[in-house]
Length: 451
Image 1 (cartoon, rainbow, N blue to C red):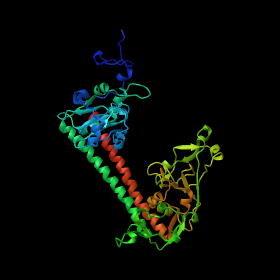
Image 2 (image 1 turned 180 degrees about the horizontal axis):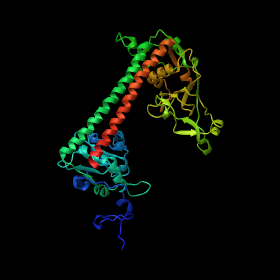
Image 3 (image 1 turned 90 degrees about the vertical axis):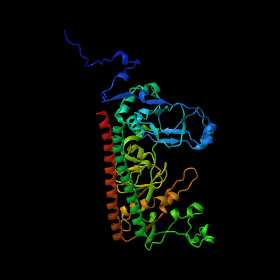
Image 4 (image 1 turned 90 degrees about the horizontal axis):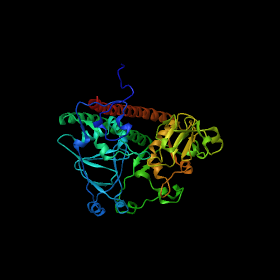
């Protein structure tokens, strides 16, 4: 008689079945731990309703979301008045998760000493047995890639799949001793500190570029003197320098004055300035082509070699989009967050949308392309402050064309380019090392626990 094998069938003890759902009992790789507990053994559900009046009295806010990185975002305090629905309190030293996004890592640890806040029933809240598990270790386990795989087998629903509280509590996790937990967590966070130090170094190096440019080009701080005199609160502007009426147009960004002895030229005297366009989204034949098409979100002070979307020749023929040559410079005229004022250099021929100003045909007998790019990166804050508009201030092509550029001699421009290349090289190395350390931190923690 042939022996029965389970090559294709997974045999599950009846005592382990609590729901008739295949995905709950199937995983591509079993996780085996030295010592395991269910979350139910160590987590204590915490539910304490709180009124809007209680939140207002204590100046506590309501949750907005937990992102995929496990970071908490709170609603502005004034939104409490318009918030609809019941609210539960999250105390210090508590773990919460988002039912709908927990499988993506939306789990947050509200550490001891932090201010309480409110959540809806979509965010189950737990205290935990501190004699058995530390909060930081628990948080790391719950956000690990191995735990996310377990969560994928616990979701219910289709369009908005959730992980219910009982399902969450039934999951098993490894539980080393408190001493072992502390060692693992300390090792992990030491690597995180090393990565953060590299980030700070990169920021400092970026500031070094700015300072170097300021020194070379003759920027000086505009320090207010002779207090209690007319100029203390009023900025006096030379009438001959005005090119546009409006307070915003004539203030000096960042309290800086330029006292350079070098020549000034407007951007339009140095190159051609144009912009792009967005082909009709209703025409599918305009997209999924082979012409790179840049959006402002891709303009991040770097060289662009590829784009998220590509358009077709038909799109170029039937829209205001144009193909610009490699080595053209891009300035984001508007966009979300910190996008406005950022720059990029084309490493390929590409097109752009209408929110990008493109500088091409740059006269390299007057200004070198890489020097102009470095200059524009240094002018980021000034460019942003020049924008107009109430709800979302924007730059426009005319503002870009009229923007003044300091022109040192070509030999000095070359010196500046080489110096900045060296600093940028250090920044790139720091970023690469930071990425390596962060990866080692995650892999090291999980290997120690789940191997």
